[in-house]
Length: 69
Image 1 (cartoon, rainbow, N blue to C red):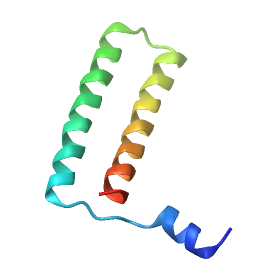
Image 2 (cartoon, rainbow, N blue to C red; image 1 turned 60 degrees about the vertical axis):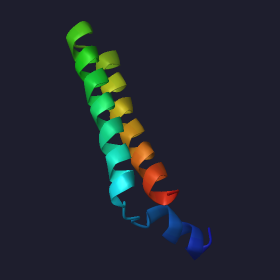
Image 3 (cartoon, rainbow, N blue to C red; image 1 turned 120 degrees about the horizontal axis):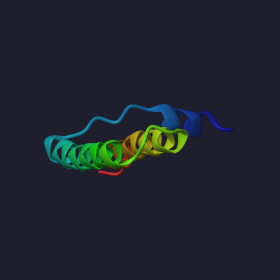
Image 4 (cartoon, rainbow, N blue to C red; image 1 turned 90 degrees about the vertical axis):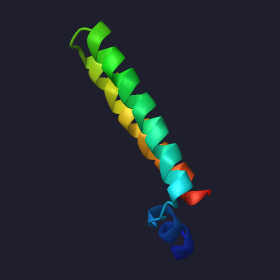
């Protein structure tokens, strides 16, 4: 793998205020969904995975926002 690709994958991209607002809105929505899942789903492996996937989703959203804006 070329060094440029490795650098791009792990580079930190700053967010301007507008992008940070978008991230905060999506984070709030994901937290609301996580709260709903926590209320309605019994403790289980599946619930844990669902919450982990939401955490992963937020990570990819933030990477998309910071890298592509």
